[in-house]
Length: 491
Image (cartoon, rainbow, N blue to C red; front, side):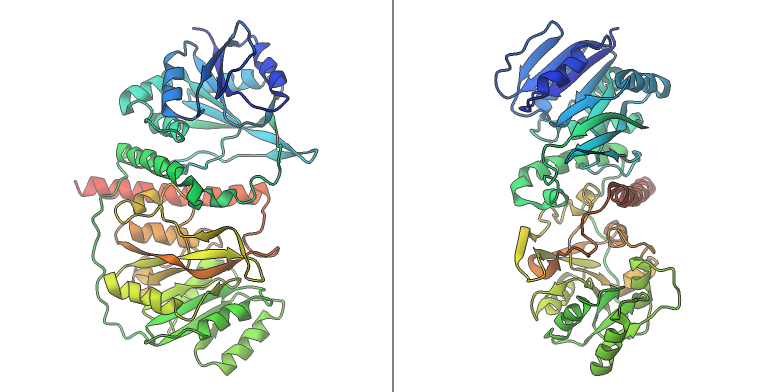
């Protein structure tokens, strides 16, 4: 069998012909497909073209795979200029042979503003189900593994945008997706600012159709591996424990002298028909925040300031200090020290939703603003991809569920509270609770999420981004294994 077929989208960049010649000149490449949405005038004996509106449509990919006769095929999945590293194709094929992987991918370099930086990617694991997993620009598939997977689990779905996602999920069921921890190519970024708001792609209303397709594909994958949960929920038991108040707003904080007073003020302005307090857990601030909070606590009986004895706590650990304290109410409601409730009735709306359906957790919506409270793109984040019937399955595909988050305190205590980390702690608990219980949603904005240079959502280096993504992938791995176990036990 011949060695390699290359599939790449026709790019409008001026360097496309140069990139194309890298593949044409390789002795390993027997065939090359160019997928384009208009006539492509170039020609070569190795090249064929396919006219398609979407490089990732199920129709296009099914047609391409049907015609592949080589042992492997390489998909170039990003539109920027790609420069192959030394012996990159040989290395990818060699690793694929040795590992018998269904797909191999690799770290890469990225050139932006004339500077070349390393861009490592993450190891794939069961919880890598998220559709935004960064595999880099080059994906090398085993043709045999792909055809075996599609025969067993069905052809790639009839989708416009989620075809490649469907393909790699089906391949991953019975074959490993193997990362080569070497920088095998360089991506030249045309617009270094293009990805600034990429983290919000999955909640941008303009991408709703894309998200529906991704959800459809992910749901079928969960059914294939035995992790899908039917829309049947356990009832939340009534607790007779005498909570001191009905609701507690919990604010973990460290070194937020410039913002935390606004957050606390937005709590104290709440108008409710029930009792509430504000528990602030100060994680050893060094910028004057502690003094400010002590003064606030002196002047307001509702403010309870906790300073943990432990010095090894992340945000999740600070939450645990609050929810297991004597001050915590029946419902524990989140507020970040950077942010604010957007009106005096936020807390009432959240607790009313708990009372309406006795949920285990309620998640609201928020608006992204600057420090002047002026709206920033993409504006309101409402996570309408959550549906009562499939939300807890779809939650495994995305990296966040929204804010503000509120919890039934008794259930939080029953599951052991939060993991002691400072990223993804709320996501982990939400997945855990949703495995058994129904989650309520409020789709109107209750919360102002303030963006500023020093906050936790500021631009992060790739190493930190990868660390965060890997942690959430691990959380999903744990949850998928637990759901598979529950389904087997309940058969």
